[in-house]
Image: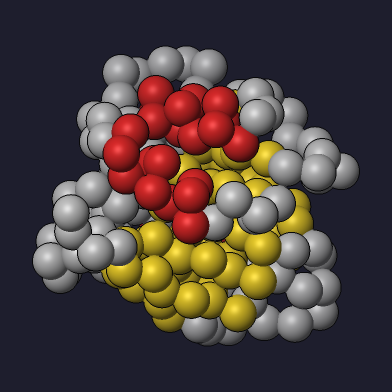
Length: 175
């Protein structure tokens, strides 16, 4: 199963469109926050509703998002979600509530306690790909405002039941 992970689009529908145009065939799109309307726009491009409630692992295509620190607080939008995909459990969070600017220890503890083998976060705008046991930690950087390079970024992950995630970093050329 192909998964696209993006984060920190901060109102840039151009960035969302570019990611989707480069990866229209993914089965699962994860938006790790900042800004939720961008995730709704992505869902519109994909042609599915934004998954705001119970996750349906049997759906052909899914778009799932969590709010970030730049989103309005909403009791109906949890700061973290657990997603099942191809025998993997993915913790999706923006990361600000786990203090990811200072390290991923709390994130990994949270993922482990939720029986997740993958933890996805945003917030830092800096790419991280850290394969590990028991948790692979992934941050796609920012699709609109990178802090680690000149070019915006996102990740694709190929998930296969019983195998480690195959992660690829994608940098988008500036216009």
